[in-house]
Length: 120
Image 1 (cartoon, rainbow, N blue to C red):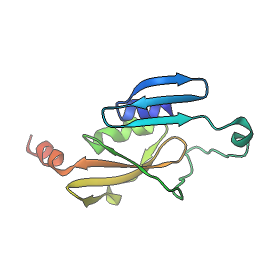
Image 2: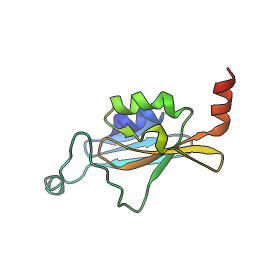
Image 3: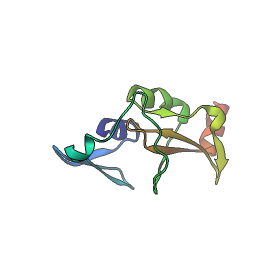
Image 4: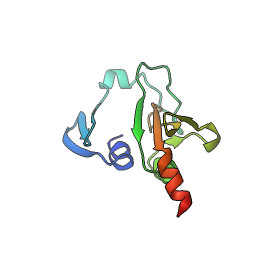
């Protein structure tokens, strides 16, 4: 999980120990905490991860390019929904995906980025 978030979203490790890791960017602090072993034994992780979308919070990340990020997310054990699932809202292209544990995340690419890329 640490490698996924640090690499895909350019976050730096601010602090880490055996049971947690704190990642930071200019605008976000993300704390990843290991599940206690007694609880971990009851959780089934699958490959690819089962989508866990019944949660009260969804992390959304502004990215320069969804297309460029797709292979990196896959390489690190996550996935991004197909391009046909993307939608426009508030001057950005949005698409959901999952991290390596199945937590739903959302990517937002500014529409101005897409216009710039097509003009080059």
